[in-house]
Length: 309
Image 1 (cartoon, helix red, strand yellow):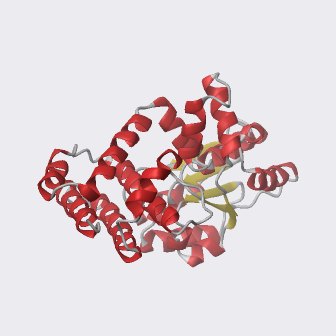
Image 2 (cartoon, one colour):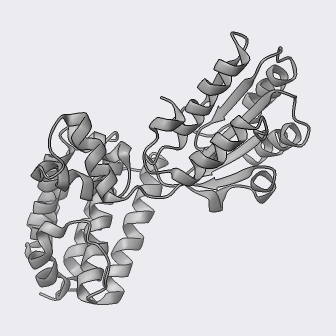
Image 3 (tube, helix red, strand yellow):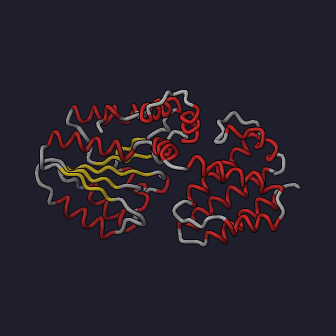
């Protein structure tokens, strides 16, 4: 993909295109923004254009994966960067908030003493978690959420359907500005799975306690999907707060506005905020190998106890 094909990120693309055209590309950039808005795609597009300019000696190295980025990985990076041949070398560090403090300090030395022809692109969804020293050594380019209409047009073209297609529009709204989410919803069963989760959430406030416990015990214990499922929990309860206060904000679940208004009346503000905090705490616990079944039971019972019925 080239920079000309990037959707919805006019400012970062313009900055990078100008730098490439004037041979003033910086040695380090930090791309921040939500998942799926094009950070990695843009970095790869820049690397491809550098390869065209620099010839066969130009290379791209990607440091991704799960877990922390450790100091040994950064030491290897520094050695390879120091030995880089003529041409351009691009290092892409995905989810750079994963840097351990030791790794961040090691990377800082490399950023302070860049090798000519070597460029670093760091991506993050949590810029506030990045070490300030790393942020200050990079040119920071924030990536915005992509407007819903642009997501619609992009998905319609990809799916060879009209942008007014009912499913296209539903997916574009749920994607919340992320092409990655839009594609996942479109190509997989996420849309149907999401609706199944919402149907369960709708029942919880008025269900019996044994029914709520049964729901937690029968919930599929899938560590690969629980993060996405908890996102649905989070969006549902944020919608409850939105309709409870008639806030002028777009709903994550606009097709359920009537049910949201009825259910929001069953909760106090304090209870809804507590549930949201617990969902966020559960996401962190599950990421740290917490017990899914235990946390689901705790969360669902909290949702039931908090309802004024």
